[in-house]
Length: 88
Image (cartoon, rainbow, N blue to C red):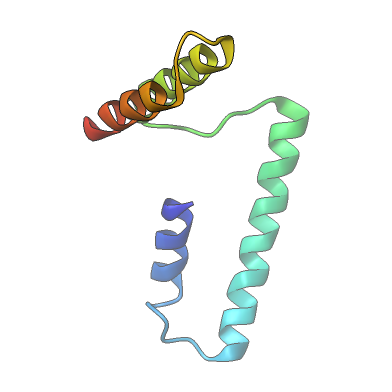
């Protein structure tokens, strides 16, 4: 989400657009979202993700599964998530 927000901010010249320009920009972005959703649903295409974040998401998913299986308590889950996110 932050990447999209940053890209939109750059395209919007950091808030220097008038209302009509902003509406056109948001309309163009909505068309890109429609295309992305269609690609994901039809082709199974995944978005590109940096290796570090891919590993982080895998680790967080693993921790969540351990919590759901009952092998971790809430405090343990939160501590492990905090440790995992510090390295990124």
